[in-house]
Every structure is written in structure tokens, then in C-alpha cells.
Amino acid sequence: MWLTSFMAKNIKENPAATAGSVTDSRGSRVEVEASGKHRDVPVVSPFGVVCVPPLGEQAVMVHTAIGDACVGVVQAEDASLEPGEIMLRSAGGATLVLKNDGRVYVNGKELGGG
Image (cartoon, rainbow, N blue to C red):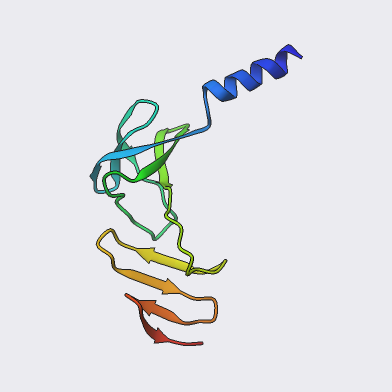
């Protein structure tokens, strides 16, 4: 019984991940104000995808064996996407959308079909 209580308290006090606001971005490293100030933190993303989160985005931070890392930002909802579809979006407004049926859209213009 005491072990369960201890574990539950420890999880609440030391969550596996925290969220905070991006306060600085430099290349593949960011500064995030979350449970404290996380400086010079690497941004982790899938291989081949490189991004620099813009200031003010809600970043998700995790602690790893090699230190803190930003594993991404909380994404805005997009009702135009179906499950399985992908949108790449820049802070400046450029978009690339891959639809389930093979259609590809760049900045809203259809480029091809399947």
C-alpha cells in the first residue's frame, strides 16, 4: 500500500514530460520555459525531418539519459485532415499536404492524383 502511494506521489511531482513555451530558437536547439528554464536543448524529430520551433509554441520536454530534449510542439487542430494524412507547415504559411488517395497539395494547389 505505501509503495503505491509513494509511486503515485512521485509521478505527480516528477512527471515524465512537461510542456512549456519556446522562448528562443537557434538551429536545432531551443530554450523552453517549462518547469524551469531549459537552455540549449536539442530538438528531437524523426530522421529526415528538421524543424526549428517558432517562439511562443508549446514545446513538450522530456528528460532522457543524455539530458533534456524537446520532442515536439503541441500541434494546432486541422479539421481538413483525415486520419493517416500528413501536413507539413511552416510558420510563414507554406503547406504541403499528402492525402490518403494520393493527391498532393502545395499551398492549396493540387499537384497530382493517385
